[in-house]
Length: 233
Image (cartoon, rainbow, N blue to C red; front, side):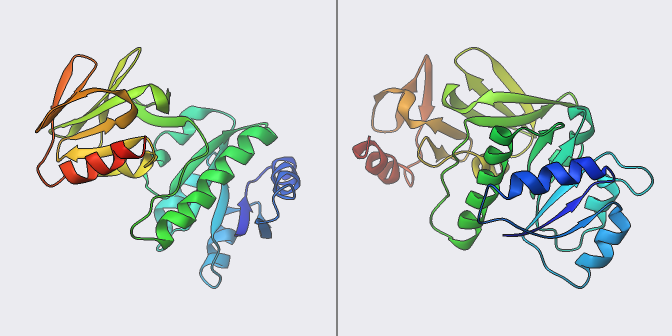
């Protein structure tokens, strides 16, 4: 993947370049201390991934994001997670990294970007996500949820209810957006309002499944796919 780094801090750019050398699929083609200069470059060049510092003086990372006409995938870098919250609403934001960036966390974020490439290239197969980290925006805070702990996702109007083993979360989003972030090997949309963790199914009847104490309806059109998936468990 062709990448650029946009960060006003020289040392931060050096760290990203050093970490990127650990992945042979990443090629840093250019680096910028100014979002304006990066914008000029992107007007004439195409890249696959941007490492973007969200908190920069003047024309900051958020201004930069809003100005992109055909945005590539973006991994945010920031010294404070609260600066990433507003930007994280955009679908092309893959992940964010807290400074100083650690190699293990860097690898996870890049893996998400690489898997997103596969997902975009195929209309029938979702990429597997190697990370169990799932982030949601709740009350202007980024909350990390452990993916395997999620057993039910339910759409209620303009909000999504995410039920986990330990806690329930309410997110302002759409079921489609949430579905795109969930790994296919664990989750399946069985109804226009429900996504389930298929490994949490306790019982199944003709038109419903039992998960925990919740009885979830199964759409007639989704039942064949559900049965096929269960055979693979």
